[in-house]
Length: 335
Ligand code: NDP
Ligand code: PYC
Image 1: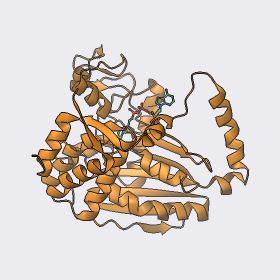
Image 2: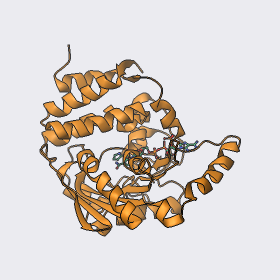
Image 3: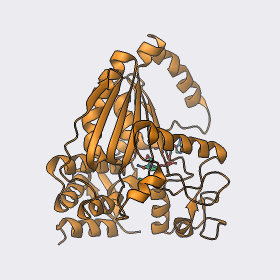
Image 4: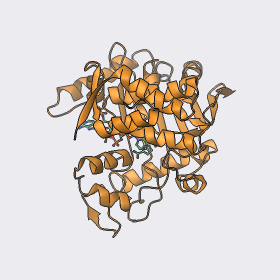
């Protein structure tokens, strides 16, 4: 695979220019470009520049509101709701996190229901933002059917990620962010693009048989992680990011979608918890005992460590050259 070296500023600008050229206003283009740049910075490449053609498709098809102006509202002291006004999720999230954090610091626990949004990103930016404010964060989002419930071979669940963040005062927070599918669709697409196999158990081909060929899985179906256990968690995400917050289930989301290839309209549920109010003043010191044990074990790494290490690995990232060329053309900046 040929790669092109870009600075983080160039990555942001390329994303911003593509989104602006497709009609997004300054605030919306800025919020998405920032999310994309941060994904590339942390090595979350399946949710970085790779997603720009999808974001652009939704602007061109008119599915997404390019001028969304989401305003979070305090529904109860412990509940914030933000109607994203049919825009991409990053602007609504950027505007809602602080209100959610303040609610959790007052009530001990608070939730954010994000509705009418188009989410196409990793979840760690939202949970990590809560942990940086001294709060425990949890987030989940559904998508469109791509995963067969355990025992089946027909897609019903989205890849339905969950993310959890734990604050570690004076240290980088613990953050995990994972699809409840054995692998995110984005990762399967990257493997297909780059000619890599995926582990057996990732999914089934169109014939319903297990395969390690990502191209066949993209024509077939993904499997949940961990069999019936991951399947149950994925089902929980369907319910929490759907009916619980007045939003759609993945199969309903698909029925409403125009199949332009970009993110459909759906919801996200986020929980913020104050460990200080819940657990008392020694919560951080107590939790560190677990991290000390983990860090002392051979062969163990803490989730999020790979990303955080990459975040601090300078200002240049290598991006697939064909993708860069495609985006330069899309943004009108190709030479
Ligand atoms: P991975 O399987 O790559 O990683 C999942 C988590 O496990 C990460 O927190 C990762 O930390 C951690 N991890 C990986 N390897 C180890 C290890 N050896 N030891 C300890 N921890 C480890 O991610 P997925 O493919 O499941 O998901 C990729 C992304 O796709 C996520 O960001 C997710 O939010 C996004 N996604 C978004 C969707 C949407 O609808 N918006 C749908 C589905 C997925 P680290 O990052 O440090 O490697
Ligand atoms: O990678 O599975 C995925 C995904 C779906 C929506 C955004 N990312």
